[in-house]
Length: 52
Image (tube, rainbow, N blue to C red):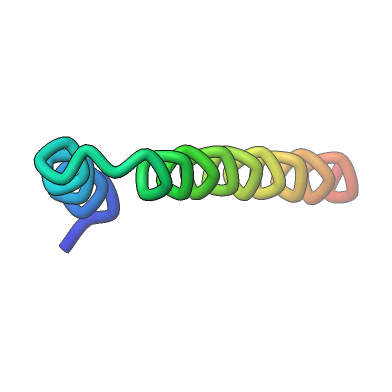
């Protein structure tokens, strides 16, 4: 199961429950995922620079 499919199903589930705390937790996890992606990009840039 892809992460985005999982997030979509979670979002639907949370909308059903309308639990503020769960929504906040989801926002935090999305921010964390974005940070991880940025880190990965940074690592790739470093690798490219060191190869040159």
